[in-house]
Length: 446
Image (cartoon, rainbow, N blue to C red; front, side, top):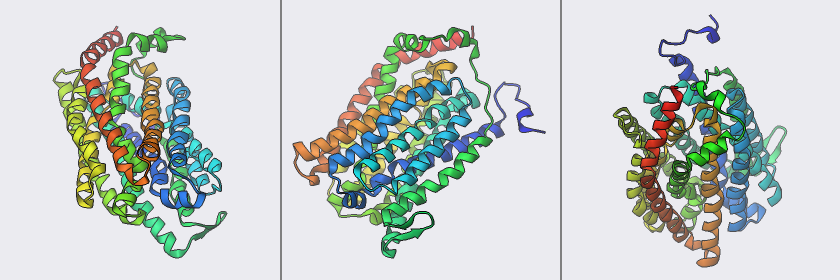
């Protein structure tokens, strides 16, 4: 029997085999995406040395180039996600960012490097809106939080693999004095790493086409969604949307800041290079992140099952309270072991706070607006967590403190302020989330 004819269970949801296969492919895509996203930060020293970049230029390449076009492309892609086959959108996006990552290896100037990261941002913009929309149509509400947590574990594993494999590859290629590859010729060590991490994505792009497109749920609302309806929806739900978009994004600032500046922090403060930090950071971004994702998702799912519609905000705010002192202390610690321990706690708390955020989108937004709604969330998160955090951190380090060795102070200010602001916003939005969830359930059933 063809899989497209496979019987749908009595509860109306797609068969678990189809759902789990799609979740696996989306999970792998997120791993590859995060590897390609953060590999530049791991290679900050050789790239900056070879292309003669200062901290502000690196912030423009590592933060602004990716995030500006990630968010710019994300909104129209979110619109496409709500109307066209989502698996095709995912496949095209994976192929684009993988080719752009490979193209980074050929960068000879700041401009070329900037454009390559633009390509990575445009390609990755296709993944999140399509993935969260697919997960919402594959998994019922009582299983959705854990499905989202599995998908977002791609951040953890992607970071872990990037740190470990990136460190090993740069060490191997550096000892060899460079690598010669067919079509590429002789490559410096850091250029070889970009080719090595970019190639697997091309195969994955083909595999994503094996996903089955699930029926869109909640289509009773489709006739109500006309031109301008999304703007009207945002205006009507502006309170909960603002707390959703900004609350989680602020909490994520310490994590996002470390993704860009963490390798530089350990190099400048602790004297560790890419090959030295690979194993400890791989472990930190594997174990605490997995535990954090599952803890936050399990607590949220359990509270939702008991009728607490504000559970996502409450879980996030509770973890953010503990994150405040952790985000301030971690980059300021001079002892390397203590710094690694604080980083492990930081990533656990951030993942427990933010990892289940898409549950909010599924509860608040109608199906035919969910892709654009998630894209809007990532628009805000990436402007704050990629562009602004990169530029503000570089500005504080270069201009306010006037020394590259003050990077830790800049990261402490940004991360601590973000945790405080995010916690306050989520607590403020609890009542609004309860009302918006109830309204969406009522509309979907009529």
